[in-house]
Figure 1 (cartoon, rainbow, N blue to C red):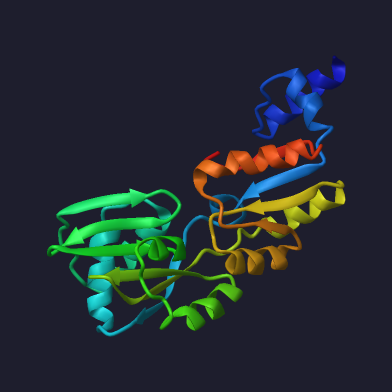
Figure 2 (figure 1 turned 180 degrees about the vertical axis):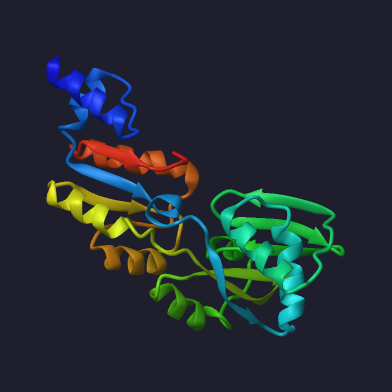
Length: 235
């Protein structure tokens, strides 16, 4: 009881709230920690690093991107909207809009379908990505996230977004590893992007996981006799 009292008191001083004495005892037995990527390992403030139009001008791509992303509150969408505004390009209005969890955005603009999202979304709508595939693979290998855009059933380009690591992430992860914890990063990013970031940190990546499937990944590790800590802001 004294150790529990001291532990919870010290935690409170450091801004850590512990739900119960039982949870603190369970925590000491953990052997695995899963870290969400965006906003936990990274700063959660992505920025646009590259605009790659295909068959249209850069300004046309940015106008369409700004128009669809304006309807979303996702951190990637906010980064793109900010970039478009800084270029003094006016976004337009949509006739319909839908957010597809773990994939991207779908909308109607001037009676034609406008899409923004990852490879999974494009494949679901039979969009041919062969013209941008090689470039997107190169970007993913260096930890950048390529977002695809399609309009009227054709790919019209990519906007590349990058979210930098928090200054404290490497040190924190090194400290966790020294305590004997196996560290995983859990993300919806594609495997190549996730692997590039995981390699930089010396941890394992669990990638291409839809938001609603993250809990299942935790359970899978638990079923393999791992005692798991989950760290994130959306679980």
